Image (cartoon, rainbow, N blue to C red; front, side, top):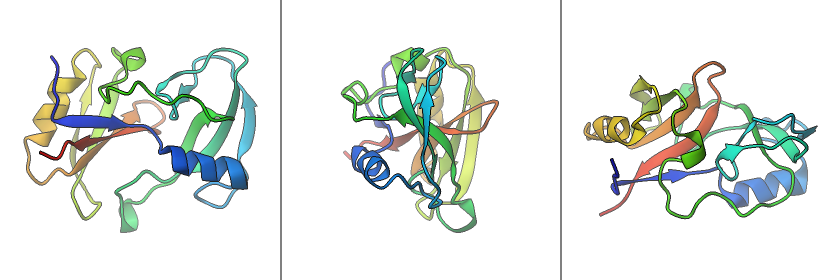
Length: 157
């Protein structure tokens, strides 16, 4: 199923540029340099790392959360700028079939729902969550570690 009422967002290029330039993350901790073992989910281009790639591991505060709902968690990105995700803005093809939690947030940055999905048809789950008018954006999260994967926002229309 294809749904054009939303867009998937990787970690913003400007945010990644700042982290790479300063070597500091959202918690003001030093960014760690890592050589990929293979399979690390890259939040810059929304695919898994290949063995041997140079990565940065850092604490990231996902957008659109506030107060006690603001979290900082570990994420991987390429150590140097990359081409970024597929420009279409849909669910990352490389991560289709991967079970994820979709956590819903309202405009005040508070959690207002969510769902676990098996990854087979994420667009349907996204559409179902966005059917609730109070849902402003979604965060896709890793099931085991709870780490932020990407944001999903409605397309203005």
